[in-house]
Length: 65
Image 1 (cartoon, rainbow, N blue to C red):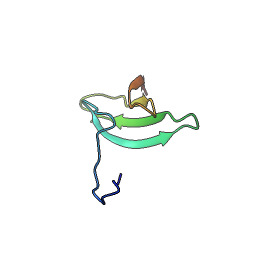
Image 2 (image 1 turned 180 degrees about the horizontal axis):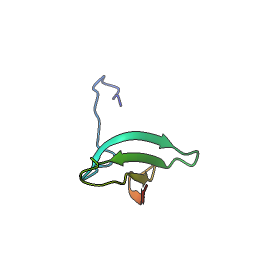
Image 3 (image 1 turned 60 degrees about the vertical axis):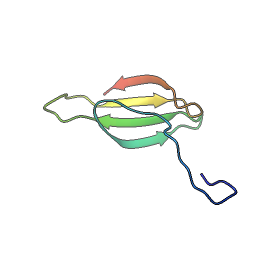
Image 4 (image 1 turned 90 degrees about the horizontal axis):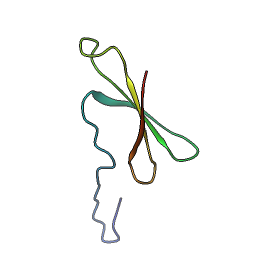
């Protein structure tokens, strides 16, 4: 984002713990964010899709795939 003074700033929308990624992201028409993350097969055979609220960044659901 840019302030009127020309100073750029950013903020953390959501902080993930564990796993690698995000590796992919998609936005639904309703504004939800779908974030795909994975781990090395030595640690876990499944990936996770985290569903975030598009306005607040709150984690709504995690889907193991």
